[in-house]
Image 1 (cartoon, chains in turn blue, yellow):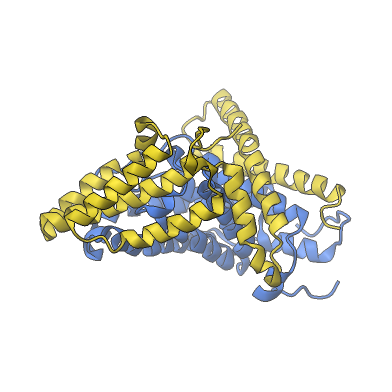
Image 2 (cartoon, each protein chain N blue to C red; image 1 turned 30 degrees about the vertical axis):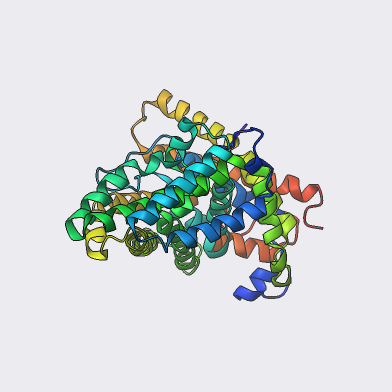
Length: 213
Length: 199
């Protein structure tokens, strides 16, 4: 097989393989399940804190820059179709008319950026690399979510930003957690690294070949 | 089985096609942006309430749609009252609640499968870009079926954790969970491939 074409247009045109569909579907479900244990709202802010952002970071880090956000989009499409898959059993079109819609858009962008950075970290990106990617991803979710919340609510951006400062410690902890989990998963399952998986898929066309680990 | 907020009931709203309801929702939400006076808020509220009556939605079901906003409404009203006057604060807050209520009404009166079919149809123009709507629909139903599978993996991991006395560590929960999800996904992928999904 020749050098695979990784340009965005070629990726869009290339059909999602059965193996990719299974991973994307399972990770969409994983993000949903991470919202199940329940969520709590910080007093004075409408957006609940949950482990779902952890799932979003994991999807980007493990599935990569294109399948990761796709898993998030699939989850959001199911939510839009009425299924109560967001933390605290939220779901339905109302979620997209409410103040937290910006964070959901941020999830897609965050998963993309985390995946993009990690794909450029080689087969076994170091903890610092993964941690930076996750921190940047979480920061982006806030950077997109907060202005949109301000826009929807009409509350000035500065006030909304101050209210959202309460998220920062939790998001930082979740980023560290995501990085530690990603490293742990890559140790236990080498194909959890997008670069390893890509190399393996480019190297074999159906038959399982054990690539370098 | 995973179900949405849809309530089966004979009403004119239930009989409308999903795509039409989605388009009407988009128009109505845009229209809500124009509502800036208390009188306008009153008219819009009456209209939304009227639609809920036409859809034969019970008060408790309607409340469940806007309930997630309750803290938010308290917070935003407080902030708005500090920076603007009472009419502006009320109309701004009411606009958001009404938009969420309208979107919730579509969810309450439209089957999940109908909404998914409408999305599939909406994706058709993207065919030229290489997006296959049928495959997207398959992907969505695969994801729905995966939710109980992942929940099952999570339950097993939690049981194992309890047996080892490591209930408090999120890492000891998340690593085996994600590895389990990947293993299952890759097996599922092979099964799909064996059924000719890639041909």
